[in-house]
Length: 465
Image 1 (cartoon, rainbow, N blue to C red):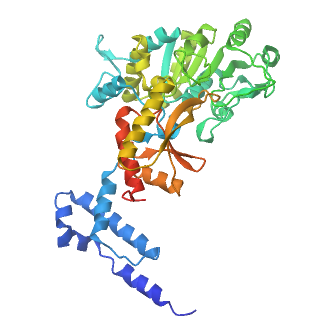
Image 2 (cartoon, one colour):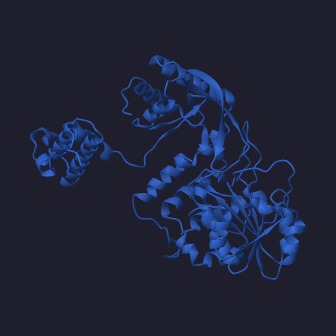
Image 3 (cartoon, helix red, strand yellow):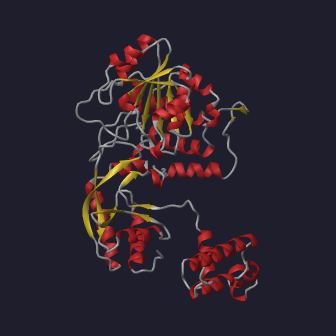
């Protein structure tokens, strides 16, 4: 083997020269930075700073440890990993960005419950243990027309629980065209199998008729299941069985009908580019025995899996051991109750998701032009352009939401987007045809100035990338 190169020798010397944590704790130049910090936090920052310097040296840089590394480490430790971002993608229910933002009333309710004790499972009238679902059950009954209701942690959990309670060890009949894959690579058939139900596929991918269900029914059939294709669409030579026809078959044969409605709108949505979406009340009215839907999609509330339906079936579901494993916490109950109250009070338009989905084009164009004005004042060249957004969150797959955006042309758009993501309040945009697109549909008026600031910092190289 040959002798180490001179450059390797210099790198190793610089690595050996990295200071110890104890040395840094007593370094006079760092005293002002560290004196007011708890020792544990100071040590964590110094370890991070030394690790950063070590990585830099190993990558071939010659710059050794600097006090500025400590400043950067302290900023990193002070920045929460989960924090607010500004959504300029044009996707309203963006799963990666937390889906539905909560209404101010729901945020306030969560804060009031989070800061102290609550009657989560305590009946204030009777002075004894109560149900954590009580705050939302009556609201869900009134809003959906169902006899009873239950809430778990998400819609996949609701499907798992419903099938485990009603069809474990028995058959669950479902159309082949409804065996969808949901987020994260998880598939409805896999969730169904985990429940203990035996999946029986009926019909074909594109066409399923009532006779397909009827011919597959046996004395061992536990449920007839329908899955709303909320995250994709079949077009062309297609046929499917509606809830009303399936419910009629279920009543005739004494088998409950379970409908996974997915995105779960409580009221019809109106807005340019939106497509028709089945509502929960209409599905209940059509005869579904159990309906499952999400809380953080078209409902516009917190992540939750809502189960509504016939009292006798809900009692079986509620008594299943998985109910406890999938139960929601007090913050979810608080946010969901406040959101449902807005529906009850006729104030559904105050829910951010519904408002974002229904913005008129003139409002969006005016907002984009205000952002353009702010950018121009910072010497940023952009143009306002019509664009198309999406509902997102596995809802209304064919909907294309006409919107407006500020479009910027940079030599390296991906690098520029990275700079925007590193802003004090990260801005999440997208690239289209090699240009940076900042869709204003999901930006509030008060968000425009921070977006313009982030763009200015990134374009002037003052934002670390």
